[in-house]
Amino acid sequence: MADADDVRHLALALPHVVEIDSDGFDFRVGGKGFVWSYPERRPGAPRRIRTDIAVLYVGYEAEKQALLLGEPEVFFTTPAYDGLPLVMLRLTQLSADRLTELVTDAWRMRAPDSLVGDLDDGGDSSNPDLRRADQ
Image (tube, rainbow, N blue to C red; front, side, top):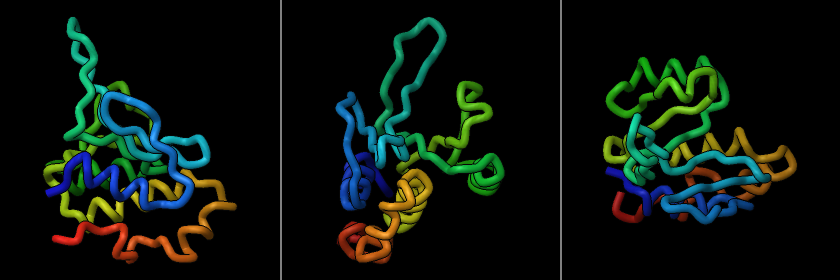
């Protein structure tokens, strides 16, 4: 089971990541967001930052749909995200290994080509620094 601390640990272990000041977590590479806390919006209520749910960049609509259909217990979306290559994921439904894969893939898609080699030179998802020691 993953949580916000796992997201933070994984994201900050990736090259050139910047954490944006927020009520939850918000990580960027090359000025582009790849994973952040879900800003839940409900009619008539103030926005609530959910650190148990992450918004994840997935790159393509086809990938988004595959995740939503393949693992509906983990991934979901809302109308506010229609047409955007983003999914929300329930962190408590993920293992540390799966979270590592998802966050690293999101980083790869958002990082400028000039930075991707820095991950390949020693920071890939098989790197023990990107995994929780107890998983």
